[in-house]
Image 1 (tube, rainbow, N blue to C red):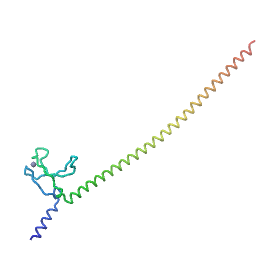
Image 2: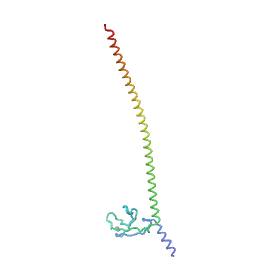
Image 3: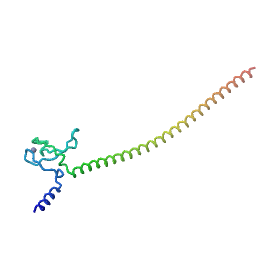
Length: 158
Ligand SMILES: [Zn+2]
């Protein structure tokens, strides 16, 4: 008889209702209080019982969840949460690495383009220098021919 009751009670404690097996409390409204996690910086992650009608018209019921009542499942859940966060960060890092690869690839393309432009520019510079040299040569040729013409004029003067 006693053992049967023991089996029954342990069976009910295994049921996974909201609150991960924590004892149920009633708020001042007479309804079952809900368990929430603290979001502010000082006590982040700590749990408390609060009125289910919060934030609209709650009765102001507040009670910390005793740390001793946090069972193994809750700790496991916290570990699971941390694992999930780590996995999310890893995915983020992979994504960033992928982005970095793309940027590096683009950078290589830009470098190639820049090199092409530089080569074109130096080629153009050589062309201009050649052209300038031609103009200079032409000027010298013109100058020489003009002197020759002047000399011819003087020479042919009767
Ligand atoms: Zn209430």
